[in-house]
Length: 96
Image (tube, rainbow, N blue to C red):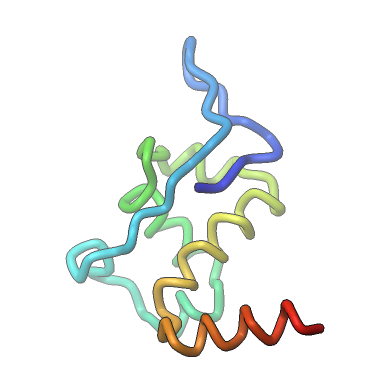
């Protein structure tokens, strides 16, 4: 779950936390994985409305501040890292 620095205001609702769900193959349809892994803003913006809870609207994703967009993009990228490699990287980061 990512805490947004700049909450999204939607009518009477304030969205300050967003959960990024692991994308299914269906959620990835039409998306080039190389662009996703390069954190291409347009590609991330297409994917986020499909895999966020609460579901962010395309206009809300487009209006995100850069720091919030990067927070959500980083959560997406983690799903594409081998769990063993991720654990090793986290262990290495703790040692440094």
